Every structure is written in structure tokens, then in C-alpha cells.
Image (cartoon, rainbow, N blue to C red):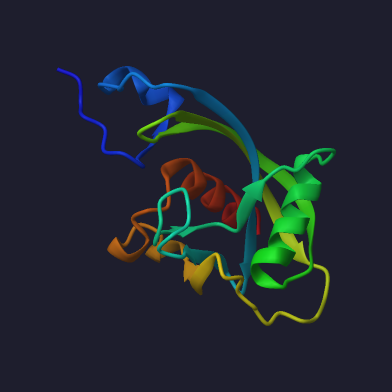
Amino acid sequence: MLKPVPLGTVIPLSDAREYDLPEVYSLVHRVVASGILILNGRVLLLRRAPNEFPSPDTWALPSGAMELGEIPSQTIVREFWEETGLKIGVRQRIAVEAYFYDKPESRIHIIEYIHWVELVSSDCEVRLSPEHTEYSFVRESDLGSDRFFSLVAPRRRAICSVLELI
């Protein structure tokens, strides 16, 4: 028997066959980039504002959609600055993941480039954009806690792989 899918749920494409997926009116493709910043053995996570798509009021890596003419490494540098006020550089691309979100009117197919990033400035004061309500530097042991349950498995794996490199 197929599992029901609550709207807004992240489903890796590799798991799609297990779910009863609704018919949708359109398919939208988005390419996004996210960044893993580790300071003192902890990863930076941001809490999305209650009105932010996808998955409002959940924890995630700093991330955002590519703009015309950008490559993923440029996207994450720009998004990090916009979302946190931090100046970063890309050390390494860690993973490329594909998944989708279902909304009532469409299915959004997302290709996410996950990068290991580092500060390029001594200023490490986080200044949140209105898209987020709080931030936290999280230990690896806390990634599976109830507080951070919304961090999807592919991102957890990528974070753990970066922590192994340090």
C-alpha cells in the first residue's frame, strides 16, 4: 500500500515509488544551492520564517535559487550574504541532490547543489534576513534531535561528510 503525502513534504526522488502522489497541474523545475558552514565543529542552520516556502518555520541550511547567469557556487555566495550577512567562499561541492515538493497547484522539482563553505572575512556576526527568524550553530550529535527534525536526510548526510573532512 502506498503512503499518503502531506503537502509540503520533501520526498527524495529515489523514494517516490513508495508514495501515493497526487496528480498535479504543472511541474516547475528549480536549481538551488546550499552551503555548509562549520565553525568550532558546529554547522550553521537557519529557521525559516512562518510564511517562507518551502516548509515554513523549519530549520535548513542557508540556501536559495539560482538566478539567470549564475553557477551554483556563485549562487551560494550571494545567498549566504543575503540571508546571513556573512561573506563566504566555496571550498568544495559536496553533493547534488534531486527531490520535489508537492503544492496544491504544482509539483516543484528541485536540484540542489550542496557546498562546503568557509568564511572569507573575520566578521562572523550573523545578520538574518526577513526570510528567517533565528539561527543556531548545531553540533553533529544534535542534528537528529526533535528541534532539527525538518533537516532533510540528504542534507544531514552532506553535513556529516563535511564534518568528517575537518
